[in-house]
Length: 174
Image 1: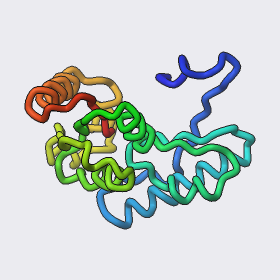
Image 2: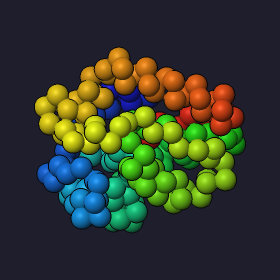
Image 3: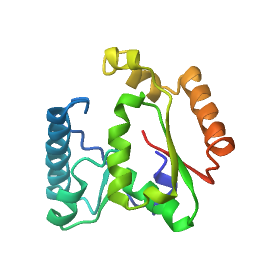
Image 4: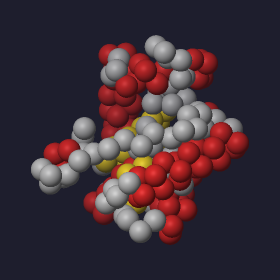
């Protein structure tokens, strides 16, 4: 929905969910994420979509899809970092996941070539949040619902990024 105001009125946003809904905690799970995103993007192109937007900061399959599809492919992580870099400012990555998941945002950051502008990664999630991550009422559902406690933690992490890290821009990483 946050994209709708940036698109022409006649544009339609269609979701193509991955058929391999796994949480990307292990290397195997990340490989399955890539396969799921690639398969969904291929379906979208075959259905006549004019562009593909990967809806995860992890940008699973971005490199593969950018060279394989005949339509533009945008990765949310890549686009966010590109915008921060275009602004020429320092930034901190703030993510809802626990620190054990930082490898995902750090990979996207490394691939962007903007590591020097990054003042840090702030992760607000707890390791215990991963136990029920995809369950009904689990951490993903609580994030999607904008649970007040999670939003309060995000706001506090953003304040610390500015006050303690000296970040000029906040990049949300999931």
